[in-house]
Length: 340
Ligand code: AQP
Image (cartoon, rainbow, N blue to C red; front, side):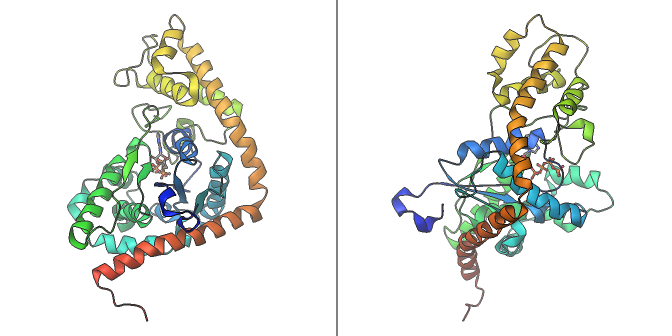
């Protein structure tokens, strides 16, 4: 995994992505992010972070946050990520993230941050706590990515705007100090880049929304069946992919396709003459088949807290080594006094 173990000629490209331990992970996180992490692990040097520093931009219960960090490590591994090949660790355990974020704050304009749609949505949802961290969240995300000289960032489409800002910040910094940062590209899935809420299919499925709006990765089959049965569709009865006019039906088709039921056109052709009840049954089957193996592996892993702790401890050390190399270079470039 580490560049120390590989001859320069074989060095793979670097992937960085993270998920917040801010709630129960949803099918949206799985399809938009996790599932792609697993596909990429053999071809890239992958760093998958548990972004607890991002999570505290919204008020968290400390005991829940602590528990969810280890749960997220278990979910990463249960979904097929090999902790020997991928760096799985907590963001707060590598202080370089916060240190670089501060420096990059000084290379980011208020006007840029003001345009971020996630800030607008989250400040509307948490009107009692519009803190500066919520506003500068994309700068911390840029630091996360740039610390590792990342080439590719697998994310859902909701993160595209943040990624573009990260590229702008990196280019601005490089423009002043030379080629310090690799400019990252997004890796956004063609199908399933934005899984929508089951109850308001015009909105993204989100783990901090009410329970009935999302499928949690750890929902049991009966709960999955019930939630999909109650998913909002429409009244024209036709199975067709048309996200603008038929967001609910299109969302179910996207979910099926992303989970391996074939491309959307084939599913639509197969479903001709069938009703929404059958569409929901087929979607339910796909979701249960995808999540069952992950859930049983999760149960096994979460029972072994010692193992999970050792994974995040060891991987944080490896991540810190890589991150500090970039941080030291940045500090030198901007003129911090050398360390004795
Ligand atoms: N609905 C979605 N469809 C596709 N991809 C999604 N992602 C999130 N929701 C969807 C992707 O999951 C990764 C991790 O997201 P995150 O935990 O960092 O935060 P988020 O994007 O803010 O996700 P949530 O579920 O909406 O969390 P809360 O409610 O805490 O804000 C990212 O790659 C994201 O694109």
